[in-house]
Length: 338
Ligand code: WQD
Image (cartoon, rainbow, N blue to C red; front, side, top):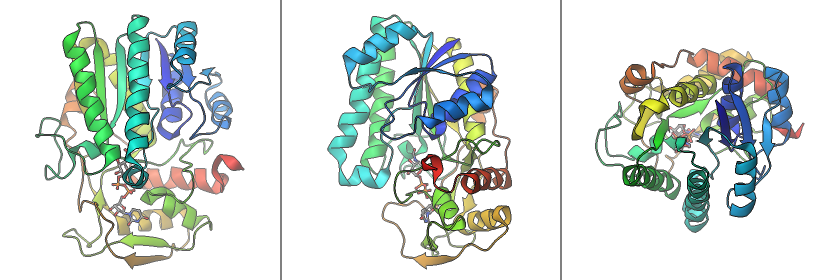
């Protein structure tokens, strides 16, 4: 299949582009590099031996995007492009609603205009909010995020479902990621957040590589095994393979269908720090700070639906994630800026 990957120069998008190419699919990346580096295209070619097509456009520029779409003429779309920093979304909700919803509207109108109705959408476990106790089930109740970023995902899942419901012929996969970390084993691509990382794993790695002084542990008085927050960390390569599995099963979906992409297991902050100490071979300084506003104590996936319907389960361990994440960060201490 020829797949248009929006945001394909980003962390999950680039790993998914690699998995698609290695599976024999054709890939065109649509990315305006606002939040990613053009170097990623070269690295994808270095890893796979194939250079993906590139449409260096902003989805919000509907005319330019339509022209790029027409020229690529893909069979399906995987839509990653969007803003994704929770804290930033609280500070500037209008920017998040305008960007994440607007770019998806532009994509949907363009897909309809060109008769393409197969779409894999990048959603997030954040849509579960604090509505359920883990393990979170796709049909476990109302979706209701606790921040504007998460609400854009709740809204877009609903919009995509309504579009699919209103017109036949749509095949839409809604993939709810838990906590993607790690990097491609080559160490050539990985997570490279702008500024100070919001998320735990890139923060730990920047401490491990000497860019930051110490890890802040946001609370150690949760009702968890060691008092620190527990999350379902999933290797980005497993996540990428989950996208390929969803894409290849999409024709069997009439309408829209949600699937969790997680491991089904929770790991604490302290356990994560220990895993990265083992991978890097040196101690990683950490200090306990007050809880972070809006954090849940525990979060992990019910993985049965993806296993039974996609034939996909995550296979890589926390040690694999730490080893591969460390290789990426130690080989690229300043990310793609090096
Ligand atoms: C993980 C754990 C923190 C940073 C977020 C988004 C979610 C998704 C993944 C996009 C928590 C603790 C963190 C730090 C810490 N993104 N922590 N010190 O909050 O589970 O999920 O990223 O889809 O939408 O909400 O991930 O990595 O920020 O936090 O102690 O410096 O690490 O309290 O327990 P989170 P996270």
